[in-house]
Every structure is written in structure tokens, then in C-alpha cells.
Length: 146
Image 1: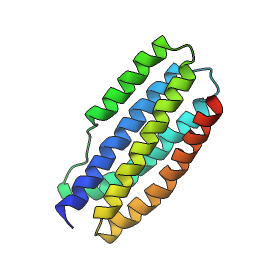
Image 2: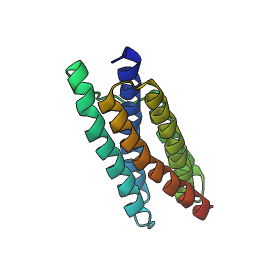
Image 3: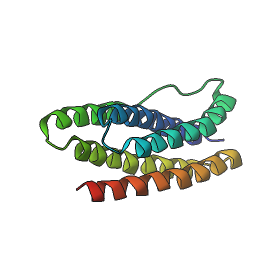
């Protein structure tokens, strides 16, 4: 195991925490919009990824990663502010969530590049597949909301 390997997995976990928080907020803000089930599926996918990755961090470090990123908090705040100004709140949130999906895939790919342990590679490959589907779904929602 390399220190870069666990560091990049921890960074990914922080981004996944960002995603759970952002999607949860968006689900509340967009209540009644028809997007609730899609947003819940994104929350569920991230929680499943966290359930898959956190034990691997715990095995190596003796504790899980509870953190989030400053960038994730700023994106969420930006979306909240923009949604109060713009007339179509759904479009704002969907566009910002699609950017979160891009960012998440970047972090997964970085972690995959650093991965050397078989258990981490396996978990990341499964996570990548699942979150690629989330990315594609949000991209399609963004296109249809525009």
C-alpha cells in the first residue's frame, strides 16, 4: 500500500460526502419538482460507495474519513445563491450537480491511478462503474432541463 493510494481514496471519500450533502440539500430545495427519485438514487449510490470504501480506510488507518472539501461546500453555496436569483431553480441545481458528477469522476480516476492494493482496485472499479451511471444520468437530466 502506498501513502498516495490511501490519500487519494480519502480525497474521494470527502468528495462523496460532499455529494451526499449537496444531493440531500437539492432534494429538499427541489421538492415537488419531479426530480426527487433521481436525486435519492444519487444519494444512495454515494452512500453505497462510502460503505464500500470506508472499511478499507479503516483497515489501514484505524478510523474512517469523516471530512468534506472546501470546494464542495463552495459549489453547494454557489448553487443555493444562484437558485435564489434565477427563475428556474431546477436548472441551477441540476447544472451544479452535473459539475459535481464530473468532479467525482476525476477523483475516482485519480484514485484508480494511484491504487496498488487489489481490494482498493476492486472497490474503486465497482465504484467507478456505479458513479459513471450517476454522471450519465445527471448529464441527461441537465440536457432535458435546458
